Image 1: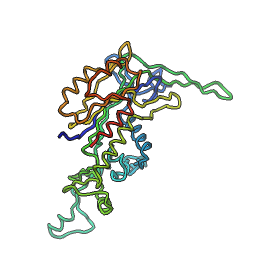
Image 2: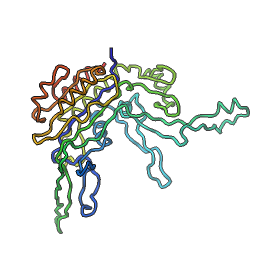
Image 3: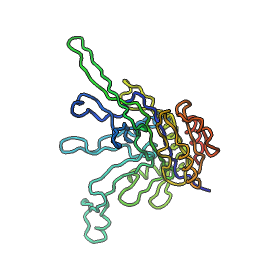
Image 4: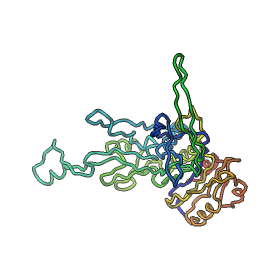
Length: 354
């Protein structure tokens, strides 16, 4: 029986009249214009939202939806000028599920180097060797992979909103904001096999060694094998954490300038499935035509055929009715697809996790 190791998918956001991720002020004549992030593709400049930005939306959404404790970022080191040069969260994936899912880092100066403990000098070689310790950094690469949110429209789709702040006395103060009308697509993948499992081998360790004994004595953590620890209720907890994340994607909220542009960033389309491999296969599946945005049905079918031996769950296709131009064609795709709404698709996939 195939083991589900990853959950991978893609989604599409309708961003009509939106400004979701800013790039500061424009250049040249546009120095008074607040502009969104854009990238160059051929002759066109396309709006996008950074992965860092929408990952923060997702972290906030899942913590809010589930009532999870928040792993707050804080400064842990200052430069000579008094500015922050190192930050980290709680570094506690046992108590904070978002640390388990999104990872963390507390880098240490001299990482990997062996240093001698000066407070207990030794005379012989064995004693000196025992008093040497290797500098270790606490790092967990994120089990959750994400691409940027990028426009599927290849035509110019930005507009400038001219605004004014009216004063009781004096002339109004003008300001401008550039916004866009488009649809934004992204790809994601969750390494399900890593949730609730932590490796403390080498000089990059995933658990703070000063806390391990406390977690094990409280029964929250177990030693699986030398240097590898797991949550004591891992099978239950990782399904709970992964399911919460998937459901949060379907009700995603966040974005810049929401007071002025009020964009619903909950996906209008989500396609996702559980696989026995880490390939983020559901990518580049949408195209903008004169009739509207369409799902590349034949491309999706080819992907499913190619990865049929690696698919562990049905392919869940969640669509908001009336959004895609080829909705009728999608409804005829076949038995290997479960077609429903975005929220129901993520709920069903959550239930299918082992």
